[in-house]
Image 1 (tube, rainbow, N blue to C red):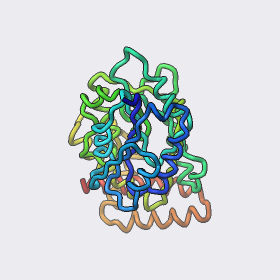
Image 2 (image 1 turned 90 degrees about the vertical axis):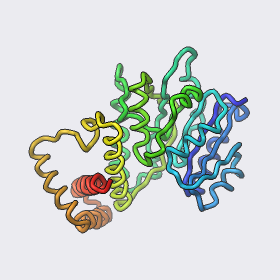
Image 3 (image 1 turned 45 degrees about the horizontal axis):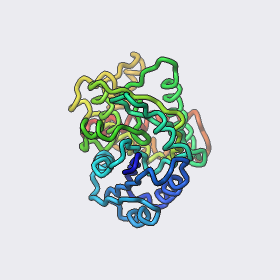
Length: 306
């Protein structure tokens, strides 16, 4: 029986999946002590064949059900005592498996071991990429502080490990969440007495790139996800964007922009087009404003649509 199960949920990223499996094949931890489970969630691009040719021990093909459901399917199929979850666009360093396993100490229970996912330098090509990479690193800088206990809003499920039996008994992910499933999971886990521990040695580079349109779409889905979070867990409201307090002037400006964005999609479409132009001419200060407006406008449109 393998000691470690590696679950990789994937959706139509066949070229990246091949790179991902190539990186798993050169891990410093023995391959014979691991099993690879690739869950193809609604894939139509040959990802299943790539997974089989790339060495996956098990390939699960399912209708598009979302990343939470895909991880749950992998968890159900896993046999290792430790389950490591790694998203398909996150490429692990050679010591990734060993670092997570080394953090798994006898006698400990109810622990989410969260790895480190800096943005891959090659994927940082725009001002938006730099903003996203800096935002992620600022979160990690806080988590690294001595004595800091990670909160549910610190958890990222694209790179983490957990005791298989404990996690299965806990119930895994809520499949109704297609975004913010990590926040929802961590919120329930912390409330049930679990802890989150950051494992900096479990390093895997995130090959993450979004243009202005995709960034706006992500904001829209984030609004929908937060609305669902608040419906399912009302006590979360003060800790997500829907309920966060703002300084008076910022609140007034935000309410005004929200009203405009909710009235017509033209407003956020215009901001998106201006951001595209701003990226071409490298107007960084203007881009910071435009991306803030784009996120805020699309986020509240997502909340309203939920």
